[in-house]
Image (cartoon, rainbow, N blue to C red; front, side):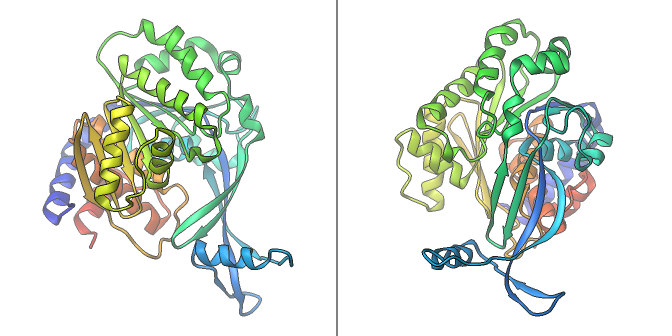
Length: 371
């Protein structure tokens, strides 16, 4: 439980460690999206005002009612922003003050304007045009409609020719945190992982570092492909302390692919599922972050904290990536799982309320003051 005392202690630890953060390095890849945030109109009251469809269930009812009859649905643009699991996570880490290098699909040969601020904050390199997402935002979640044709250009040959094998090797072999995310939408990601294990990992030396993975909603991928991805993720544990991050839906999907019990949706049921997944995917840490709380399993030991849930978030697209950035920051600073989880839920909680990524002082203040 994330009591006020635990949050205060986490904030104190974070502020005490703040001076070490600029010396931390992170290397992330490989996706990139331009996100268009949209609201769905329920009733239009005037040319300027409307009430929105507030829940996914209500939106689903409206779509279902149109079967065999058709319907018209109005969407309203709220903002256009940088998107993709990698850029959002990398931008958040850079906002904390880490030295961040990002390689992905941000526009080629010219970086898309949506990533301009990110490019001023971090070292960014692009291999391909970005994907595009129309994100329908609701109070209880979001529906992401993605166009990902350009992401097929994210492959090992293009990494070598458009970025450089030597530059990639240097970043991969030295960063305190390496994060390889959005496996679901990158069709060549498993092949890239196989190449890294075959060609680069055997030459690694020095202390073990952190390697973070986010599959990013693998429901549309074949079970055999998901199982192969999990095998590859576990194989990296030979060289890295591996962290796999999942949201609640993803945990259920992975559990079903692995043949595990997924019917119990209670808190204890999700904890047991996470333990079972880590038993089948032997990595250092498995993290699961439902909307209102989060848990981590490290070598069988479970930590769980409540989060600062709000029923009316200002923005939810990117909330999970902010959680991942906060959790990884905690682990890089040597915090235990509970404190790292508080950094994760605090980062996400600040973001969904403000639509901004927090700095370290923002995060510490939020940990102390959330109700």
